[in-house]
Image (cartoon, rainbow, N blue to C red; front, side, top):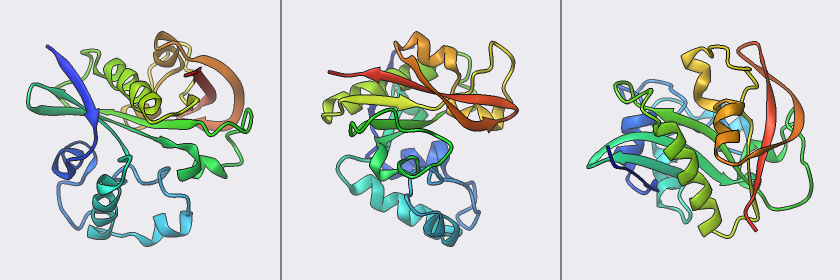
Length: 191
């Protein structure tokens, strides 16, 4: 398996990983943290969510990266400047300093491709993407699960261990809890 990670510029591939099975379904589309306004996030319903993602995919830089096994898209990581996300104003996730850091908030691997190390490729790809776009540092906000199993629906934030293996270090505790586990702010300096 030769996994390659590329910027998320193909809407159909983004939809294959984070989109709904039905166009009218109200699924996340990985917009919950990407939008800076919770009002906009709540207002977008059904097909409007996919239309908003289509706009983001056409922007430079696009809203994340995709992992491919050959021609097949197998995973997604949401990564963008923190200023363009809800983490810019999130009261539970602290700001370590005033750097214009990037955030990686979602790592998703398609069913049938899990437990093959693809999340590691996605996180490395997210780091490379942020670095290539001039980010001075990148942050993630995974759960500190100490090896305990994380419910699959909540595993999208990653685990502290995943981030540590990618070279991130704990920069701060947070007031955020997901699936009963505290979330920590993990950071990697890119300078």
